[in-house]
Length: 217
Ligand code: AMP
Image (cartoon, rainbow, N blue to C red):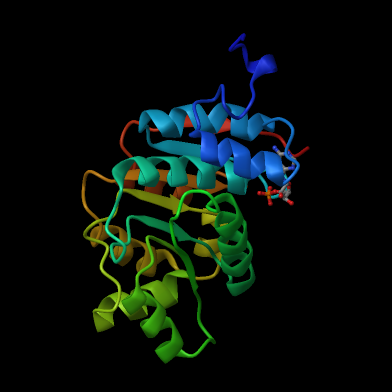
């Protein structure tokens, strides 16, 4: 089978069979451009700075490699090894829901954490264990300060819609969260726009990132 970008399929991008099967079951016939570019880089362990809007298939572009890398690492049930930070409650629910579907055959747990929902339920869910957390920055920080969320085991971090997170005033929260993660983690930052303050965050927190730009479809 050819591995030219045009002929790319989810398995030829290097994804574990259970992930390729999960997306096939959802009716995804072939990877979108952002998925073709992003998935191999993230599977290699590279940091990534991606300019891509919603609607391009960006969620699967980071979610599938995160699930792949975590499945390979075989984390203990209670360790949070994957974290996705998003600007809003709605996006947290949407991304967690998508990841939950992609994770069907992987046995990895996905938990959304956002403000406005009862703290005690989230704490109980964290006690049961969540290998992947999809959170708004404020609520993630709340849990970290209470000691109910530890990012010490983190393998991979995604900042999704980073420009929106900054617009919503989460810059300090992001810095504090990033400081609590291990230096060796892999980081992907996605943003619809790349103003200087996003580039400054990338400069501080990403290591020799690959850069990709995908136009809105
Ligand atoms: P996103 O840009 O991540 O919000 O995704 C936009 C929509 O495209 C979602 O409804 C996804 O389920 C869908 N989608 C993502 N990747 C694919 C694909 N490779 N083939 C078909 N649909 C996809």
